[in-house]
Image (tube, rainbow, N blue to C red):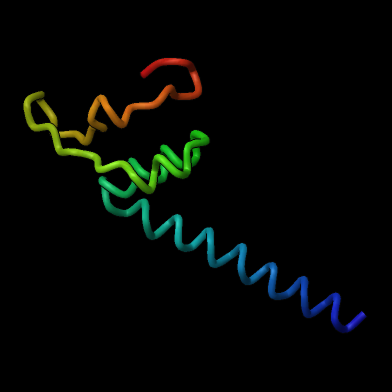
Length: 77
C-alpha cells in the first residue's frame, strides 16, 4: 500500500511538471504555435517544424512553411 501511494505521488508530480512545461512553452509566440500543433495531434511535426514570422499583413504572425503544413482538426490547412 505504501508503494502504491508513492507511485501515485510520483505520477502526479510528473503530470504537474508536464503541464507547467507546456504552460512555459506557450509564453513565446513561436513556441505557442508548436504547442497548438502538438495538441492538434501532431507531436512529431511540432518538434520538427520551424514557424516563420510573417510581417506582410497588418499584424505580424507566425506561419508554418507549406512543406511542413498539416491538416488541422477541422480539415483545413
